[in-house]
Image: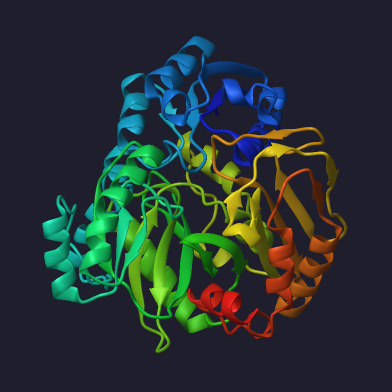
Length: 448
């Protein structure tokens, strides 16, 4: 087992990983930009290294600085968290070149899995249903227009080297496609250091279902069931739950088997998520592999009792999976609300500033993953996510009631946050009945 791990990230996920390491008796090294010098992940880590100015490209996306921090501090491994360099093949290769273990898939698998366009091409050749679109990277607006003409509008422009809604644009016609092409590529470059994009046909009113998998270095795999991620705003997930109200046991087994087949096909190991779109007829289409820990991983942890960060670290240290598929049991219903420093009444504009008041919810079945504290300054330089509120109930009805109660207790002053927006969704009759799809918020914002 590792003695020291460097966490190449910030915010709540850095804190989450540090806590797991401490529970496993592993030393931790935090990295931080000038803007994050007072952050909790810096305070709670055993060591901390400054890696540059606030801009991500000069700090959290600076591979040379992070590798140097790991070498100077004696880290044996690096956990990339999510976002930033977590799916960057060049970063994984740099770790390997410097005899540092990358806590994630092998860089060869990441070359395919972390590149959404490449993964689509490989899996399509194996007969796995993929959403119609480009066969690989789209290099020009003219090529994009040709593909869109073939599959039909609307189409989605997507970042090949990342996720989380960055570098994504929906185009309904050739004019929008031409206008959004360079915008999406530029956003992908800024977020992931990779400007490559690809094109997919947009499937009307699907549900976004993802399967969590674990695989070790010896060919052993399990899936941990599904998460429902259909409540989205501009392709950013806002509410996730596990299980999904539209997935029965038979469909779960089929999607789980497909997810494992995807992992086997690309030589994937460690924790990963295989994302699908599910239509109203029960047909599902491969969308992408998220070759990292997901923001929404806590809902899977709560219903399975399996700590995914512990599993990641053990797998990367060379241990075989101690779990078989028959060991995976699911109990209860978990829901997660992403809490963002953003103003729902102003098109979710980021709301940086100093937190002047803070009350965290608690009680049975309530988990809060956050890095904020009283007088903490929310930076304008990074993603607006400041925390996650997760609840577990015996069933979906109980989980909804528990989330409603927990949201009513959650108080953050001094900045605008999305808590009131979540409260409205949790009271919506369609959400309560499970009548949701990726268009839910479009309808919700129209009708309230």
